[in-house]
Length: 462
Image: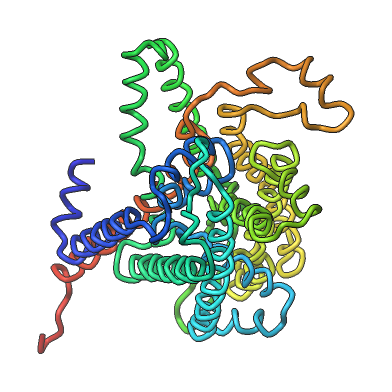
C-alpha cells in the first residue's frame, strides 16, 4: 500500500492529475460555505436541526451540507443527475436519441450538451421552488427564514440566479475532474460532500461517550456493525458471474488464431451506486412541487411521500430495483455482445452462437440483476430503520395494529447517525473502490509504457 502511494507521486502526469482533483474538490468545499443573500443563517440553522430526519436532511447529505447552510452550491449536483436520468429515459423511447447515442464521440457530445441544458432548466425550477419554500418557512422559535422586507420577486430571482449558477459551476467542476483529473468527477463531488462531515460525526460520538449519552459497548457494537456492512458491500460489489467462452481456431495466412478459453464477467451489481442516486433524485421532485404550489391533492401526495413514510420506502425500494434493470439495459446489450463473440469465432459451450447466446446471456443477467437490485435496495433502506424506524402507524386500517405488535426499535428507530450504513456508506465505498481501480489502472499502464521504452528493439538505423 505504501509503495502504491509512493508510485502515484513518482509519476509526474498522475501526480498532476491527483493534485488537480484535490484542488477542484477544495474549490467545491469553499463554495459550499458561501451563503446566498437574504436568508437568516441562525433561523436556517435551527430549522435544519429540526428537519434532520426528513428528506431535507437526505438532500443536504448529497450537497455536502450546502443545502443546510443555503449556500451557492445548495442544489449540488442533483439537477445534473436528474437531467441525465431524463435523457437516458428518452434514449429508450425516442429513436433520434437512440441513433445519436450510437454515433460514437460526436453523439456523446451532443447528448452531453443537451444534458447541460436540461441541468440549467431543472436548476431554475428547483431554485424557484426553494425560494418559495424559504419565504413560507419559520424556524422552531418562530423567526422567519427570510425577513419580511426582503420577500418578493427580487429575492426569488436572486435565489434562482445564484443557485443555478452554482449548479452549473459544480457541473463544470465534475467534468473537469473527469477529463483532467483521476475520473469519476460527479461521483467524487458527491463523495467529498459525504465524507467531509465524517470527522465531525466521530467527534460527536466521542463527546457522547464522554457525557454518558452513549456507552462504549454501544459504540463498539456500532463499529463492528459498520465493518460488517462495509465488508458486505465490498463483497457484493466485487461479485460476478463468469460465463465461459471458447474461441475456435482460425487460419489467417500462415498463422493460426484463437483456440483459447476465456470468460465473460457479469457483475452482480452492474449499475453501481447510480440506481440509488437516480431513485433519490426522482423522489425529490414531489417535495419540490409541493413547496412551489399550494394544492390540496399535491400536498397529500407530498405528505405520503415524505421521508420515512411507508409509501416513500415502498416507492424508493421499487425505484431502485427498476433503475438497476434500466441502467443495466443501457450500459450492457446482450445482443451486441453475442454478435461480437460470433464475429471473432467465440461461443458459449453448449449454446449456439448468435440469438441463442444473446438469450442465454440476457437470462443470466436478469437473474443476477434481481439479486443485485434487492441488495442495493436493502442497503439504501437501512438508514430508515436506524434513524426513524418504519412508521407503520400511518398505514390505513392496519397501521395502528401493526404499530402495537411490532417492536419499538423497528417502528421508532435507534437514533443511529446516518453515516453508519445506508446510502451514504454505499456511495462512499463504491466511489472509493472505483477511484482506486482507476488509479491502479493508471499505474499499470505507465509501468507498461516504461517497460516498453527500456526494452524496445531498435532497427538497424535506430
